[in-house]
Length: 482
Image: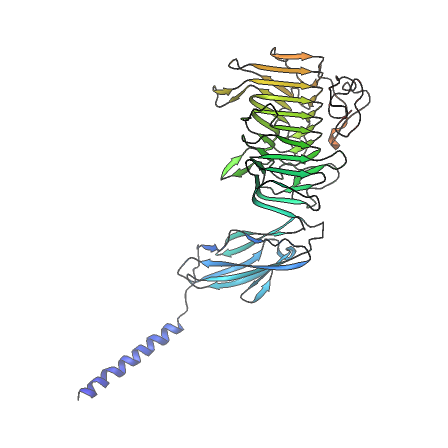
């Protein structure tokens, strides 16, 4: 009897369990139909192989579903679409775009990306970039793809010990480089340095750039697409950061070097770094040698300052500092400076406004508020220089009484509607006389015949040739070109 009773209720229970199991297996799992989040296993998919011959590289990344519900990715695609150099594969399906990819709750899917590079193709940029774009419920999630496009020396997030670079192929700086304290980086004649848009070369130690009149060194942004190189004369500023010399740095020398299209604001340890092609922090070594000596060099098309210095020391001879968004030369908070045979000025262009910032400002103080400032002694000697541009005032010299200010301005041609302050010692300067450049709109700052800057200078011992190696006349012309 007991066995019969057991059978009588076990059989309906088994039927019930079977029905529940069948109904559960037949029920569709619900998708998350609005909102939602995904996450990537990397913040950048980098193909960090330095290619030395044509070849392909494949990298992988996971996309995580962060919800307990199932999600449907309506699209996993490349930002540049069919024009992208990359290709994708998701769940065995190749293409530039893969649609309707399901991911179970708290699960993930692998995405494989490949790129083929010909490193000898000089028409390719140094960095071949694109974006991986994933769409969930109408919202796009994006990460960058980055591969090295040309055969070059790539310096990425690097702390540099004492070393000498080569000139066999270009150097590309990605995400900053730092010359360590007490170490020296030497860059030889003919070297080509390309810097990414978010990057700078920082110097705690010493930098020596040894360009020559026949084989200069160049610093440029790493964008090589046609937008940057339209025509012969158009330069787009702000393509990279610049050089930054910390207060510990000393004995830096730059010779026959061209810096173009820098001056972008970048960041260091999450903090913004002022836009300047060259920034020099205070000279704390004070060993009688300028913190930076720069000769026969060009700074052109800087989005921010050309040279920005704070209570520092600098000597600049035969240099051209032109077309900067901030002051071409800005000396704050005193310091010790010597400029000879330099051409400094901005006229503005379609890519660079020149409505407020001047060509040069020299102060023995630095404002810290509307009525507050810090000050230090100033010694500046400016000779045989052109300081000109499209504004009625291109120079500003000012000093507070807290510290001495000794500024000599001799045999210079400058533009100013205001009287030069009394603390400036002047000698044989030309005010508001157009220097008659050949054609500044085509980056030609040589002097026309009849220019008031011709034969208006005074000979300086040791400076017997101009920026191009042309012998100086006696008397010499004002500016970097004889």
